[in-house]
Image 1 (cartoon, rainbow, N blue to C red):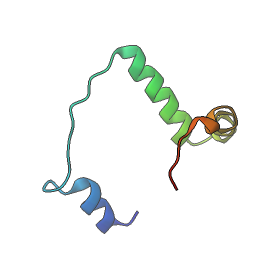
Image 2: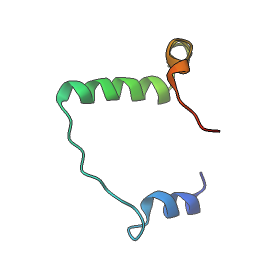
Image 3: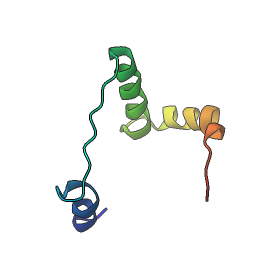
Image 4: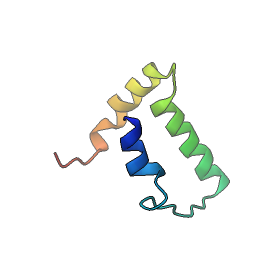
Length: 62
């Protein structure tokens, strides 16, 4: 994403939406674990295993 797109979609105070979020500690821990698996460096093998196991659960409209 280039800087202009990032500004327009995320950073511009006139158009962005910040939504309060609350979750229990265990939920946050699991979310962090999943986020790290999907986005973290050095997690390629774990990502592949996750996609092979759970990838079919995704509902897409392409």
